[in-house]
Image 1 (cartoon, rainbow, N blue to C red):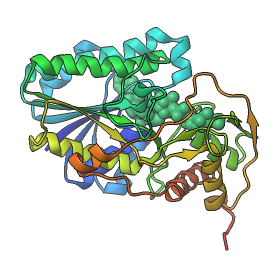
Image 2 (cartoon, rainbow, N blue to C red; image 1 turned 60 degrees about the horizontal axis):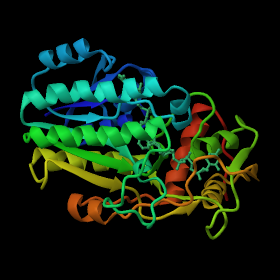
Image 3 (tube, helix red, strand yellow; image 1 turned 90 degrees about the vertical axis):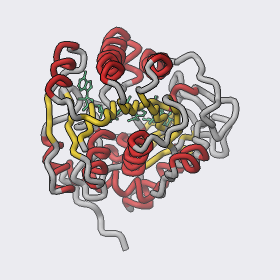
Image 4 (cartoon, protein in one colour; image 1 turned 120 degrees about the horizontal axis):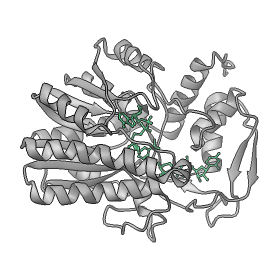
Length: 345
Ligand code: NAD
Ligand code: WQD
């Protein structure tokens, strides 16, 4: 069965391609390589012994999107990861973000809504909740005005899908709201490849660990949390990837109750920045050079998922502990930097 994965050479997309191929799906990857490289295809093949079909296509080009689907008429589902994702950059380049993240979505939906009987999965984000009043956060928590154009593209993206599903009742869609994805494939064949200075915590930690960065700045030590640092829900990318396969199966088997559904994907456990650092220190055997500095503007104090809906309805649960996830992130960083790990006793 043929499935299209947009952004399938990126961080979460590539791990999802692996899980799809492991479950016997035929994957066609669409990616324009703006934040990835074609080498990822080889990594996927080394894990699954199967080469995915790759189409270098920019989803902002409507004619290309249309002609792709005219040539591939046997596609049973689309998992849409392709987007820009840097929150800070989105503030300085809002139109780039609206163009890339929303035009791509609209062009895909224009095709799928006319194709009939289509299945669509959308990468959304816990960013839609902002600082929720109640944690753990359920899917019913209010969606608050976005802090950034990036966050806005996820909120508006969900609204667009909902509106289209309302009139095209044979379009079945699921939006998955990820909390904080981290880690790499345990084989170290694929992982996260942030361009430039990482904005996210875990790649900054591992890059500091191998000596690429001098020191981690911990943004704020005076939050209203047990150790004063912010709390997030760090989920292993492989667990996240597996959830996509389960969500896709739900759509293919028509088990969905409504034709637009939303699920949180997190572990259900919050970890503070200092706890994440301690996890790194445990699995690497290295002390991390870090310093507590001022708060980062826009950061929320605490976010972690209520996973009951995903657990009960999808039948999915994150299985990887923070330390095991951190170990994969660390092994991956060491591999790509040729860093020799100390032998732990
Ligand atoms: P990523 O940048 O690693 O992967 C995105 C892929 O999409 C890249 O390979 C890029 O080349 C491709 N792409 C971007 N624009 C494209 C276009 N116009 N045409 C074709 N390909 C294009 O990002 P990721 O971390 O894997 O994130 C995947 C999705 O999950 C994104 O939609 C992101 O917003 C969402 N998300 C990510 C996180 C996170 O922390 N990583 C959290 C929540 C949601
Ligand atoms: C985690 C914690 C920082 C870097 C972002 C996006 C969000 C979603 C997930 C896509 C925070 C602290 C970080 C550093 C630090 N992505 N930190 N020093 O902020 O939860 O969310 O990724 O949808 O939209 O905003 O993740 O990894 O940036 O930060 O102290 O150098 O680590 O303050 O508490 P965040 P993050």
